[in-house]
Amino acid sequence: MNILGISGSSMSPAACLMIDGQLKSCVEEERFVREKVARGRLPINAIRYCLNSQGLKMGDIDDIALAWDCAKYPEYMGEFLRSQEDIYPKKGILYRENEAQILKRYTPSIYLSNLNKALNAANLETIKELTYFDHHKSHAASSYYNSGFDRSLIFIMDGSGEDRATTIWLGEGERLTEIREFKLPHSLGRAYSSITEFLGFRAYTDEGKVMGLAPYGRFDGKIDQALRRLIIIKDNGDYEINPDLMYYGNHTYNERFTDELAGLLGEPRRVIHKNEPIKEHYKNIAWSVQNLLEEVVSGLVRRYIKESGVRNVCVGGGVAMNCKMNGVISKMSEVDGFFVHPASHDGGVCIGSAILSQKRLTPSINIKKTTHSYYGSSYEIDQIKDVLKYAKLTYKEESNPAPIIAQYLKEGKVAALFQGRMEIGPRALGNRSILASPLLSDTKQLLNNHVKGREDWRPFCPSILEEYGEQYFEALKNPWYMAVAVKVKGDKAGLIPSAVHVDGTARPQFVRRVDNPLFWEIINEFYKITGVPVIINTSFNIMGEPIINTPQEAVRCFYSTGIDILLMERFILMK
Image (cartoon, rainbow, N blue to C red):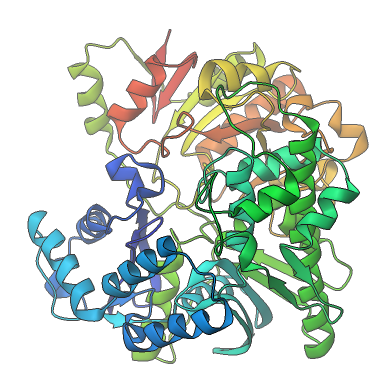
């Protein structure tokens, strides 16, 4: 049974291919078109890759599963949006126009027509029909069926999926049951994004910057009071979002928040240069919105664990990319097991729709637990060599490159690693990675200022041999994907200063030899010569660009940044 899962055309369009219940390929469109999150695109290049990776054509596909329920459009969603007019009469023309566009875009005949036009333009076979799956249920399926749990609560939180913003599910065996929903406008994702824009960053791209900035702030009673008018927490643990502060009213500064919110929080931050000083006021806003998110979600988790007696927790949707929130949930005393998919955002929701399709067609199919994230494109040795020769580059071929890379890292050099299949999700986990030593206190500044081009206060993540993880980090649950922020143990923090954030936390990746032999060997060789089984690992790209995909992109990034060494499979390039 060949199932093609797809998502798009809003943020992070992607495609995956599942054959007889096994995920074979998955990749985001952004990696091909080189636009971060590929806003408004359809996953045409991703579809082409998935088919080609298994030698299939569109006619070989048994079902095409879209992770969006277009059957709700335009009638149901039109009526839902009209009903919001009665509740929130101050809706402006901007939102009416946007809603009209969405109603049109997801109308089944229009969506299929647009998809077929794009497929035809790419010289791919067109399709006759799509199978639609609820967006949040697709997220829930991706989270639960890949977790390895037999029984779990699943919390899905994002900007929106059709008319829903948050849903809570119970997974039992092969069954998913929805037990609670929060409809629009009560979106935690959109509320967090509104503050992202208020702080001078870009919504649906830079929320991680707000999360990273939050520990530099502190509690401010006035700010806390103001934001509690945006995110309203009820006594029973429920929450509401006040749309008058985001959607309805005058928008002098930004389309994602109203003048009323600016009246509560003061003048929005304007960014002229990425490293200009950030006022304490804005740091405190970041702290407060992060704290409120954690308070809301931990309250929901606590309530539904108490009501259900189920102590395993999965989280999914774009909000589940918030590693600090995940860390708070994972260490709650009520939580026994915790799982977040490495592609919990919309770039991985196509996996969920493919699973739901597979289970609809073959109910007895078994979905295996996710153990790695390497489902993207890869390149043969000869393809890489051809790129190097074409560019007239000097390189060395090494049968055992790990000790060489480790030695350069020990000397304070920065290395890039291009090998195997590209990762899914926003984290590079050893196949499209930039590596550095965590032992030096200035590594963070070196990477931010001379390699990544990021704000100089942003942290970097450590990758550690799984065998030593418990010696360095506390409260370990789901530590393989840099998706959970945890405390670094006190006696170890001083050993890896550039891998520890200002609040004493890190987002570790535990590396298993079986999953990534070469990456494991590099860290192990570094351990042999330093006594520390940890290296810094960040995505192979610069700020504002997707993770690199091809050998050509790897070479271009290497020579346009401060990276010292590039390892492409067994080929080493030096500056």
